[in-house]
Image (cartoon, rainbow, N blue to C red; front, side, top):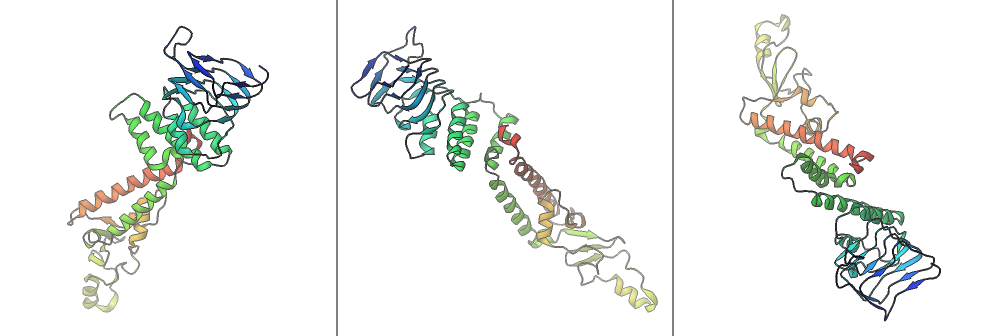
Length: 325
């Protein structure tokens, strides 16, 4: 079809306008037109006021109608410029497969566009992907990622309800922690918060007093010095006085280098961050028989598990697999 199609201003339609599988060399404009469909029919089972299935518009497509109800069907419509007001679309519409290169409005309002797609007659991920692609091509990368995150949220809500389904629970957790792979910084902050929490707990006297270490001779140490002496070492020719001195607790908490000195911050890093060994966790362990010993043991083991989960999600968020799963 050469030229343009203009159904504008005083144009009024009662029934439906069909532009299916046409090619318009110029422009399509519905600006100011009024379109109403009173009900479904054999040729219009969807009850749409405007049908433009498979329409190709070489120029721009200007919608901005004055009134349109109850719905439109723009499946597989192709145009270069989409000039519309996202808040003026009808309550129901179909835009699956619709492609465009940019918007006619210079205001790139992500929130308005997401409200627009939320009113699709049925959820379809394709329009979200198209919207994100256009935003990204024009330099709005952060907005594009937010659109894809919303797509995943909508997808999860549209799926059949399955209470306590493991996959649904993991998907929800993945979205909460790393925004389905598009917000890895969230996990980095959670890891930092976990490190601070573990480090702070190790300064609490009740937790700190449960920690023990053992040297190669079997001597046991607390973080402030030796508490059990099994072998004080060779006392030499100094006689019994030296032997008694060896049996007394030493002021040096590291046993003169017999065990690795305890450091709360390094211990927290060793506990939370996987694949890193600073020798702290392997040297110092909670004594389960001490007051709060069981609590310290459970807390540190839980911190290790949480560290593995958060670190794994952080790593996965940088892979293509995580973004398309």
